[in-house]
Each structure stands twice: as structure tokens, then as C-alpha cells.
Image (cartoon, rainbow, N blue to C red; front, top):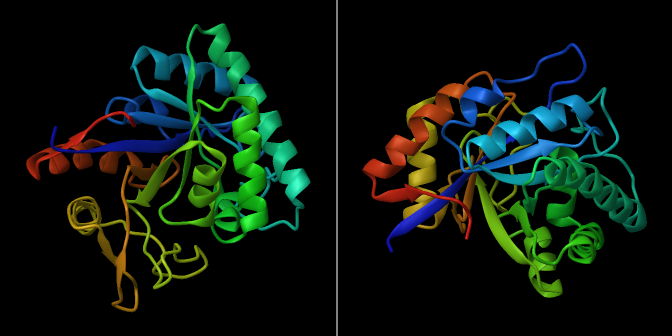
Length: 253
């Protein structure tokens, strides 16, 4: 069958009269869409439009639940309990699944957003609450999480199919976590650098951390950020670059 990898993007993050990203253009090349559910970004009309566009492009639809923090775009840590995390996930899955059903589609996956994602990557209690919420709503959903993190481990323990996620536009630390956005070297904006990183992650199973450490990593799905300045350009060049390396871009299996 050969090497293959899913390509996902966070989207549906516009709100009211404010537009974030170019979802329509990015949907032309990705295979999975993580759609905001109104807590960190998005609103009902944006959710409906994004679901409809994803279905038209045959792109897998995922719930992108975040912390209840529109002002901070869900990227500020909050001291929530495991019970609160469970409720946040169930609520937001329910919100998006309504639009998906109304449009005649089906949900593919769940991927937490921003601070919630990073917190769950290292906090077993939170990760178990998130995995339990997904499983109890629909055990057929795939749980996306940072490769090798507590979140994917919790998903596997409870019986969910998981996807180890890697990032085209982010740098890594020696422990396999993402470099904080507060650091100047957190983001990768050079296409060539991003492509070299993801090709190596998929083919070799390793990534260089910012300190030079060579970190083992598993890559089932690659993320690009829809709100990034180079998101559309990344989405256009990455599939072709991967194909030239013998890596097929395909929906998560």
C-alpha cells in the first residue's frame, strides 16, 4: 500500500463579522477538517457553512473543542477539572454533530484545540476525561492527539482508535511537546523547512527538537493551522511535496 498520511487543518474559526483564515481554499487540498464549535472560535452559521464545504470536498469532519475563551482564542490555560473537561467535550461534540447530521454527513474524529490540547498532552486526568467523553458519545470516533502524548495513550486505553498528530508549522521540544507560542522559534514559516520536517517524521519517525535532540515520533496525521499567515500556501505545497517523496496524502484510516 505504501506510505500514507492524513493532512488536517483547524478551521471554522471565524466569528460573526470577523473572518479567520481561508477555509474554502484550504479544503481543496486537506483530507480532514477540525471545525471550531463556538467556545474558542466559530459560531452556528460558521459551523454550518464549514460543514457544508467539507462535505462538498469529501473531507473528513472533526470536532475541534476548545476552552471557553473567545477572547484568548482558546490558547490560554485554564484550571479546569477533569469533570469540566468531560462536559466541554460532550457539549461541543453535540453542537457540531447536529450540523453534520443536518447536512447528511457523519463525524470522523475529535481533536482538542489550543491550550486544552496541550494540557491534555501531559495531564493524564484531563486526557482520560476527554477520551471518556469521546467514547461515551460515539466510540467509533477517532481521537486526534499529539504524537506519543497522554491524550493518545488515554484514547488507546479506553478503546478508541487514535491518530498520532505531528505539525508542519511548529517546532518541538526534547520531550516531544510543542514549543510554546510565547517563544520566538515556536512557528515554522519557511515551506522548505516545514516540508523537510514532515517528510522526516513520516519516513524516518523522528524530528529534531530546538536543542538538536533527535526525538522519536509517530505520524498518522499532519496538522497545519488555518489561522496562520502561510496556511493556504502550506496547504497547496505540502501534498505535492509529500507525493514526490512517495507519501500519499489520504484520509485517516
